[in-house]
Image (tube, rainbow, N blue to C red; front, side, top):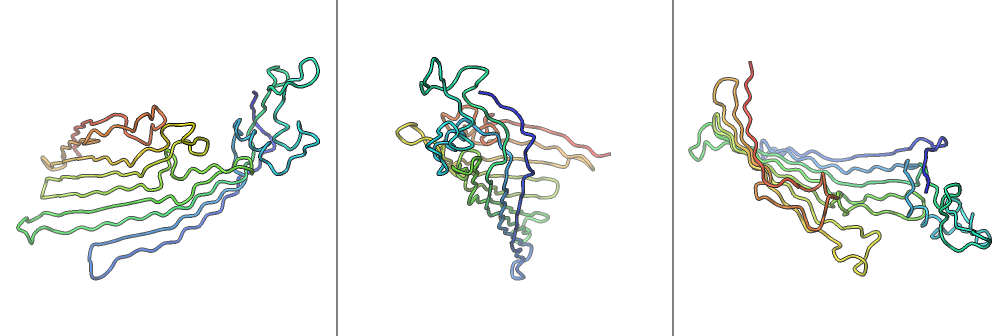
Length: 270
């Protein structure tokens, strides 16, 4: 297989729009909520064709010239089969001068995303229950991924919404308590279950097709010890939640691989 660049690439063309609303009701002072719907569509997305993209683009393509199988369409022309000692034997060529697959960067068909973002926050004082100079802050945010689809060959579509690294739902909730110089913060992080390689695998070819919901917590505390100085301590992944098994390294950046850990810091401003 050989790969390379493409001097004939065109610029990607993107179109997007967002619409939403912000709520600040008078009957609930200090409350604010915002919600937005986001749509992004890119045509001519620059992509490197994979082996699968080439094979599907060739054989699943309605534009297929059966009278000239080797060049039935633009994707079939990227495949070279052996013709050792006469007729072809059906195997991909292993001759470096005639590689079995030739790929490069191309302008794909499209890439599009639809999703919903929302956030809300609220705070209230605790003087009414006998805790002067105290306050509770609540904040939450979420993202719902409705669709994330991509086609590099214009023939087959890769569905990425709900797949590993692209859960349908993600959310974060924070509750903070402050009293004078002391502060305490609890954070919850959630992501919904995800599918694993369901574009190419079924129950017949893979034992585990889905990882369940994931919920982790972080805890932090701070105290102002003098004017301009703050001491902080935090615990990440409070419950020592492990990544799903058997994920391997595929979830780096999506799941917490480090387990429970602690951090201490001191800040002083002159």
